[in-house]
Image (cartoon, rainbow, N blue to C red; front, side, top):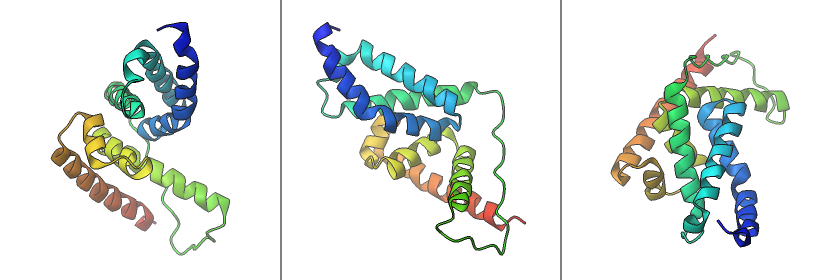
Length: 169
């Protein structure tokens, strides 16, 4: 890449850095892994920036690479993901309670980590980042019909597991 591309790449990096890191953290459940995978994604973007800068949605290319890296990371992870702590029944915390919001956030993160990596990727890309089903399919390298099925099954599995956590004493 030419030095003249550096300002464009820096702007590209700043525009996508936060969202990509958040996505990878949700995918891996590990902050340090998210930093590492984010860095690797941007290294690859730097290497191919001449080409991806001409894409209609270069951010989608980033998420595709990040998804592939996260799925590979998940396959290689040796340690099992820990279970979420259940909520105590009968306690109705105020919505404004920051500790309650943190507990819900942790429960959602833990529940996401129980899904298959492909379901987790599809849900996070669609529900958190707002990509269309067609874009999710492209990023995951599957057909649009397969993406819709993955999303449907992922939502069902998430709902069942999250509800089960809340019901545990």
